[in-house]
Length: 113
Image 1 (cartoon, helix red, strand yellow):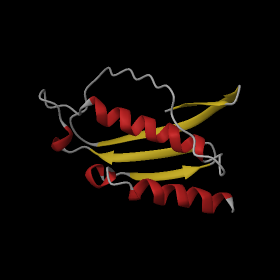
Image 2 (cartoon, helix red, strand yellow):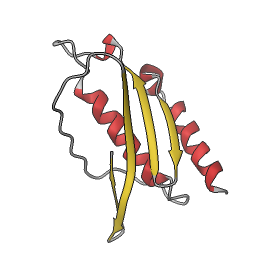
Image 3 (tube, rainbow, N blue to C red):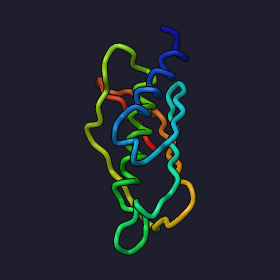
Image 4 (cartoon, rainbow, N blue to C red):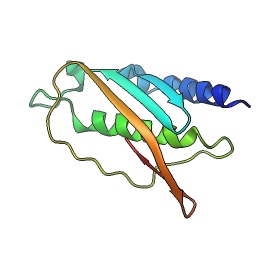
């Protein structure tokens, strides 16, 4: 399978996930990278009227996940650890997460988003 077909298949798989009916994201997968965008909606807010941390985590995890999976066509790669630091709440606009593969070390991929 060509790389472009692999990337499109990953995008199709992502968009077909039932959870994404709620978020309505867009995704673009390239070699070692993935970009995910979600429009902010008040249904995503916590009680202080900012985007809930689960939305940030989902986007960041998904972008890193698909960046790594852009390189792997035989196995399904899973997240084993993720750290998130939130500094300023978002209340409107478009959120975008960009995942990038940083390196492979001891059989593990390291990605950031």
